Length: 184
Image (cartoon, rainbow, N blue to C red; front, side):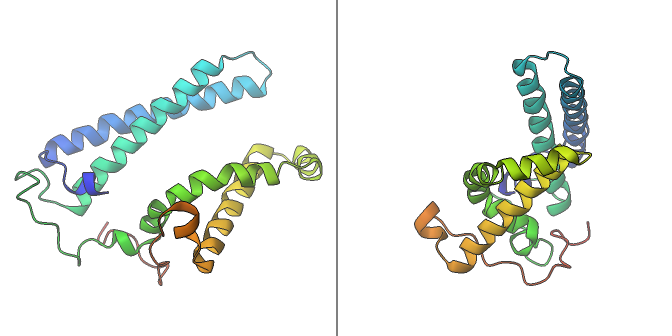
């Protein structure tokens, strides 16, 4: 978020970065989906290329988000050197109080806890139920996502994040109506 808000590029260049990185993300995502379809059809695929497709998607999507934040969070982005450009007024940027900001601040907890949730939900009963459902990978992903969120939220409420992870996430947002960045 900080990089996006202080990126020293003119707005027209940021739009170009956003477009190109969005196209890279779309290409990487399509490539990854294609590899997964081949996997589902039992066609042999190389894990090397599956990993590359994920990396291309994540790189493009991350760069596109940073450029979007630079354009929307700070309309004057890049006009001055970032060291001399003051932070935008808090009335324009509410990222730290939005759910997106909270999820970003708690990303370490999500990263460290999701393998545990995946392992706990990988029992034979759950797997047998999932195998009978259409779209089993989607359900498995949702179980992991919701389960991990529930564990992170519970640890936040118990106030043990500082002990377990070395840092605490900010307070949970009070309003779910916040859109993160005003006017976007």
